[in-house]
Amino acid sequence: MEEINCPKCHNENIVKSGIIKNKQRYLCKKCNYFFTVNKIGKKIDNYYVTKALQLYLEGLSFREIERIIGVSHVSISNWVKSFNIKKPANSNYHPTYKILNHLELVEYIRNKDTLSGAGMIITELGDKFMAIKWERFKK
Image (cartoon, rainbow, N blue to C red; front, side):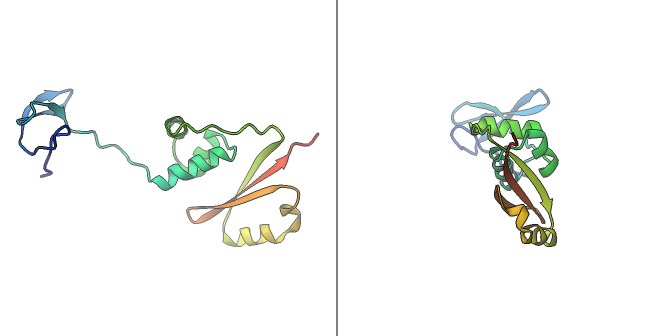
């Protein structure tokens, strides 16, 4: 059984003190603090949080990031809000992206036409790679 400590004073001397909203309530005998056990939710790896925020800064929408990473667009929106990330205003450029495996990436980079006339970044995405390219809007 997992040992529970008081979240306020970290004392181990606690007793059960009823149930509230189907959660066990506890009382710390040292500081008389009532608390319930923390809800254990699904924890998403920090790798995906970082990738989602990078892709957001690169100009991709929440839904595009959701399709690429496989994490809810609502979660991505919450991360952007919690880290207070502001997307830079860039009206002259728009990002396009491609998901490629290793061999496709080599071929993509080998073609000089795909490299010229735009900025590009390549990032790892699980077992594949993402090439993000910024191109000027055509007038």
